[in-house]
Image 1 (tube, one colour):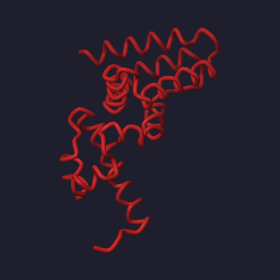
Image 2 (image 1 turned 30 degrees about the vertical axis):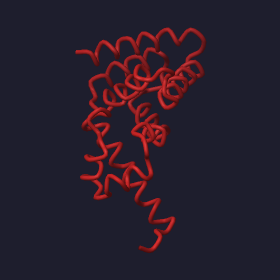
Image 3 (image 1 turned 120 degrees about the vertical axis):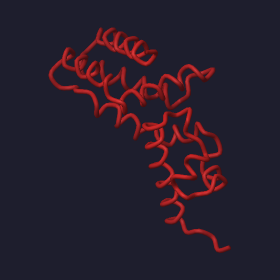
Image 4 (image 1 turned 180 degrees about the vertical axis):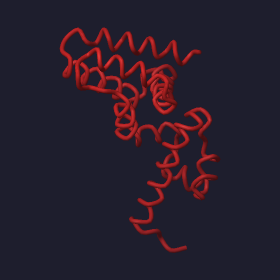
Length: 153
């Protein structure tokens, strides 16, 4: 069998990653599997595991994309109250909730918070502090706690 070109490999990886995002949002991280990804992409389970040997490799590859999707639900202009209101509104959005579940899942299931989750939370803290100043982390912590309660319902 001839070796695949670098371009073909990149196309395959992109196809897999698009399915990963779709399934994380639709099914949740726990229900996403090599089998469901194979069914959606037409790439064999072996082919997928060649590029992503462990399930956590998907989230590492998605880091920037997931964070971008997350913050797109939030309003950073108009002050801290507007940010809080946008977060509370986002708690009614399935995509936002799926991303929160993914973040929390990786924080609580790893001995040390998975790099994907810890980097995402750190970025969020930095973004909020930069935008709203010192002390704004208390509002973020309240929102994260409120989010955990929402997810447990």
